[in-house]
Length: 245
Image (cartoon, rainbow, N blue to C red; front, side, top):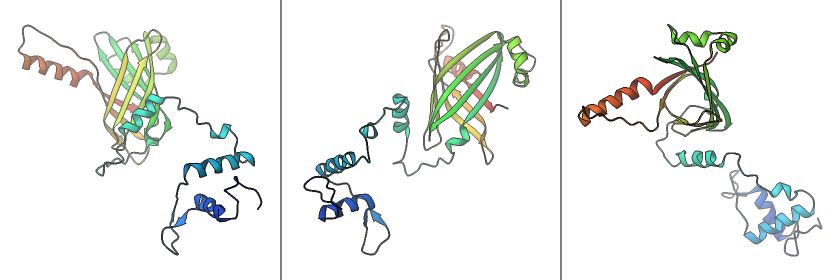
């Protein structure tokens, strides 16, 4: 071949061999099929780039790296990974978490149905849509999950939407972050406490909601006030999400 990277890089010559090694690698040991990839010096990489641009194999557009759509989520995902932790035991594939899950609860104001949808972006990173719907109090809150869409629309009182993302690390800890949109201010944050998998997609998620919780009483000792807060957490902030039908 007569094409050159520049005056120092004639393809097929001594520097051409360097280019071949850059592409194909070099044997780890003589006769070994296992190869080691080496990175040339900066000036050689620049020469390779210029050559590939000159012959039309690459364009300037190919060399432009697009920023991630959710840089904060990607950064947190990288931070939460435990690739250097030799004790990591996570075995849950990200694909098993993808889909929609629903949880029902009830208080004196009515029945609340929460729907959490996890859309896989990349391994361990999800886009989140979180809806909270409020209905009149029902004798059996779980029955709301069985209602038809027509009945839900007819009985719906309030609907809030939150959007965000979720990150799963290599220990199968799932962190969900979502914020309210339009007239639904506030944050909804969860940590995965447990999950149920039966050789396929996850059946249910047990999620612990967390955030700022304040409690004070002049009539109780600090230890009793702490017990009250813990009881509130156990009753109101632990949610069992079942996969939506």
